[in-house]
Image (tube, rainbow over all chains, first blue to last red; front, side):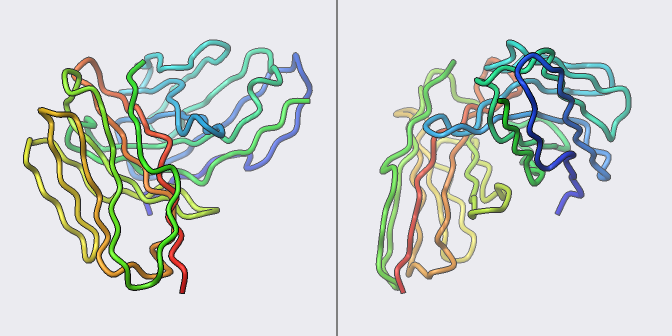
Length: 114
Length: 112
């Protein structure tokens, strides 16, 4: 267990409102990732971070932004939530680059956008 | 976007049976391949990281092989047990960047 927590674990919100999800890790891992999980699509990368204030886009980044102001926290913001962003969101961390290091996943956040 | 495919989508086997499933990926983009096990209501857990053509990894009754030239990896479970019931995910790390492209998984149910 890599000590990854996500908050909130469940959230219901309305279309057009901003939403921020938090990922917190206690392992001092350099890399952090946000994924969404949808039926038929598996896990898809939204954004990732390779260090404090260093982030990059993933496969499905439109409508999302991230921030990492300290090693242990990686925030995912839905700037104006839409129903298509209803999903389960997973945070993950890794000690090093993925060609040799595995990822550790948080428990997930269920988001419903009405 | 890279296409990582897993087959079959789901599988039901009897306790004690051995089974295997496939992960296919574009060989020209290969850098590394990961296998994860994902139990219902839990988070994915890492099984293997594979990087070299011909790699074979083993953890207990679970093993995996890798063929980077033809773009596939097999996961084998010997003598399946009910506790092996889970979704097994593979994820490709491409040579273009430090990120994963996940397959949609194979859901395994082991019937006691």
